[in-house]
Length: 449
Figure 1 (cartoon, rainbow, N blue to C red):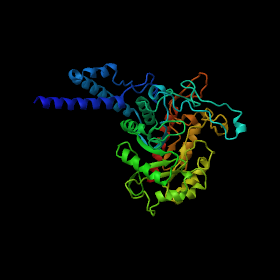
Figure 2 (cartoon, rainbow, N blue to C red):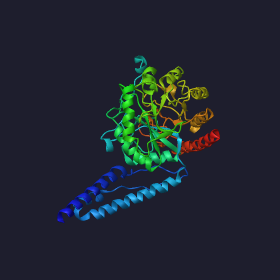
Figure 3 (tube, rainbow, N blue to C red):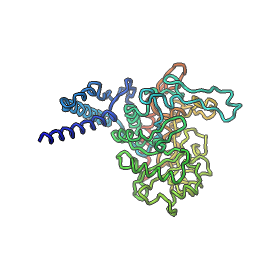
Figure 4 (cartoon, rainbow, N blue to C red):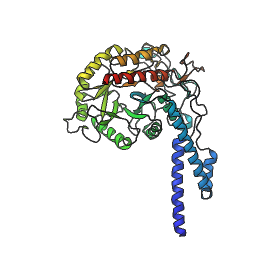
C-alpha cells in the first residue's frame, strides 16, 4: 500500500509539473507597458499576469504545498480564460478571407539575449558609386531600430507570449482571420535573423484562443527545389496540420486543403515546379496526404504563363508599392483576375498601407509610398474589391523594415525621429481593415448569390 501511495504521489507530482511548465511557457508574463486600446477608445483588456516568483518558489516544498500551488495555477488559468472570452465578445467576427503576412524574426535582450532584426544593417546600393554617398553600419536598439516607424510594443521579441497575444488581439480588432507566418525550414533562417520554426507551436496555441488561423508563407531558402518543397510541406502538415488553428481553405470541389504562399516562386523554373504540382508527374504532391493549395508570387507579366505551366493554384502580388511591379500595380488587377478566372486560379491581391524602407535602404526613396493618413491603404483595398479578389492579403501586419505594417505604432523621438500615424490613433490601420473586411464580406455574399 505504501508503494502504491508513493507511485500515485509520483504520478500526481509529475502531472502537476507538466501542467505548471506548460502554463508558464505558454501563458505567462504580460509586458509592463501594454498599449493596446479598443477601437472604440478605452483600454479593452485588463493586464493578465502569469505566475509570479512566489508561485514558482512554492514548488521548492512540493510534497506539502502541491494542492495549494495547483489551485493557484487553476485559478490563474481560469481567470485568463474568462478574460479571453470577454475580449472575444468585443471583437468583430474574424474574416477568414483576409490574410495578413506575419514575421517572427524579431528578438530582444530579454527573451533572446540580443537584439535580432531591430539592429538591421544599412544595406548598400548595388552600384558602388551610389553606395559611397550613403551611410553604412547597423542600428542600435532599443531607441535606434531598423524601421521608419516605432512599434507600440517597443523593440519586442517574437518569442514573447504576451507580444503574440497582443498581436492576436490586434488582428481580431481588424477582423483579420488568417495570419500567414513567414517560414523557413527547421535550422534555416534569413540572412539577418535566427531560426524561427520553433516559435510556430506557441503562435498556433495563442491564435487558437483568439479564433485566428495560421497559414505558411514559405521563404526562398538556399537549395529550395521541388524535392525540398515536398519535404517542407510534409513536415508542416505532419507537425502542425492537426492543430485546430492550422488554416485550410475550401476548394471548388469541397475539399479543405492547407494553403501555402510561396515567396519568390519564380526563382525555380516551371518545369521543376510541375514535378511537384502537376497531377501527371510521378513525383507529384497531388492526391497525397500532403496536397495543398499553392499560391505563386506574380511579379512580372511573363510569370503568368509560367504559373500555369508549373501547376500552381493561385497568385498573390505581395508588394505594397503600387507601380513597383506588374503584379503590385493596382490598375493591372482586373486583367490579372480575368487571367485567373480563365485558368481556374485563386486571385489574391496584396494590399498595403504604404511603403518606406529608407531605414535599411537609405538610397531607396523612389519606392516610398506615403500613407496619406490611411487613404493609400483604402485605395488599395478598394482596388482589390473592384477587381473581384477571392482573398485579400495584407502586406503586412508587422514588416517594420519596409514600413508596410498595420501593427500599432506610436510617436517617438530619440536620436532618430520616427514617422507615426498622427493625427490618428495607433489603432487606425486596424480600424480601416475592420471596415473593409465587413465590406468585403458583404460583397462576397452578393457575388455568390
